[in-house]
Structure formats: structure tokens, C-alpha cells
Image 1 (cartoon, rainbow, N blue to C red):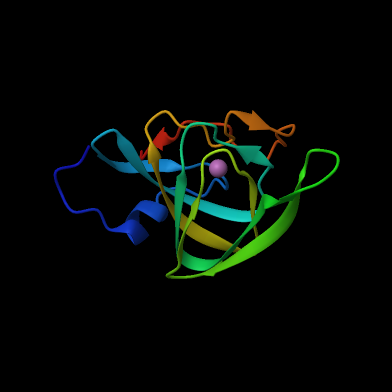
Image 2 (cartoon, rainbow, N blue to C red):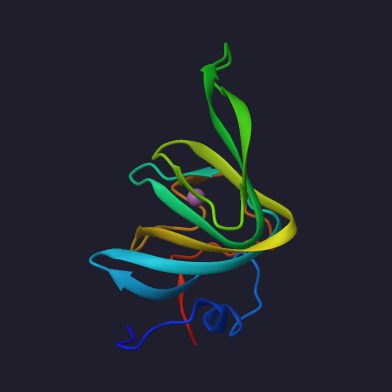
Length: 137
Ligand code: NI
């Protein structure tokens, strides 16, 4: 962990891989991660933790299954739209699928060791990195 200030734009310039979070620093037992995203992530849920999103640039959408329970046990879906400068917290246990047609840079704040694809997820496509975060090279 750096003892120097971290310029997020410089951190983001050091990698290009999409949906592959980098750990820029830690706060107690939480990671501050940044990621570049474009296209669709995968439906997943974190059973034991909320997940904090801050959009640095671009626009992120998050589909959420947090609506009324349906007869088949699933929940009604909705989508939140997060322009740059917006924060949003996905509560623990809620299935969610981030996506960004135009691309975005985001900051995530979540307990160290949290998987990017959660504890439950649909099949992970090749373009999504299932990771607990990579060090910033
Ligand atoms: Ni998540």
C-alpha cells in the first residue's frame, strides 16, 4: 500500500483490461479498487457484503433484481443509471449485473477478498475477470 497520494487517472492509465479491478489502496479491511468497464458484466450476488460504486467517468448502469417477489421465486428487475460523479450501494444479497454500453471507469469499495463475481453467479464469460482484485502494477 502506497504512503503517497494516488492519482486515480494515473492508476487507471496503467492498465487496459476490462472488468478486472485493481486495488489502489486499503482502508482497514476494505479495498479501494478501480476498474475499466464496457459492455456487460455477469448476474451475481454478494451474500455477505454491500458493494459501493463510484463512477469516475463515463456512465454505468446496474440491473438489480430487488423488486417484488414473483411466483417463480425471482424478483422484478430494475436498472439504475449512474453518470460520472454518482455513487450507489448494492445491498448484500441482491443480484446485480453492471453494464456500460459506452464504457466507464469506476471505483469500488468492498471488503478485501470480495470476489468480483460474488458468491453466486451466472456462467462467467471470457471477458469478465473473476478476481478478488489485482495489485496495481
Ligand atoms: Ni458485485
